[in-house]
Length: 53
Image (tube, rainbow, N blue to C red; front, side, top):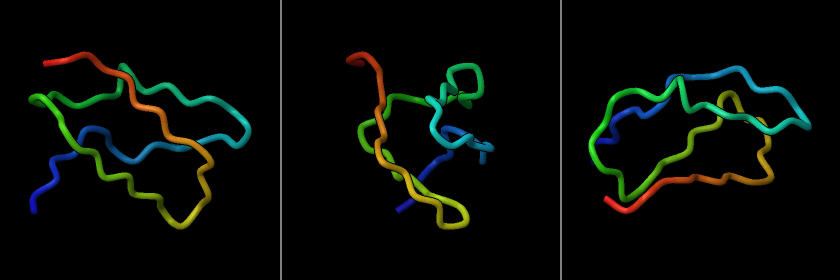
């Protein structure tokens, strides 16, 4: 299955909310998201916001 990138790798800060609206790459409507963690950091929550296409 081909997963087009919606966001390039981003540096994260611990104990902070991360917002990446301006860093999103152009894309079509999205129904599923694959979340890659590099190298292997822990993430407690992932919240994706959007609107119906």
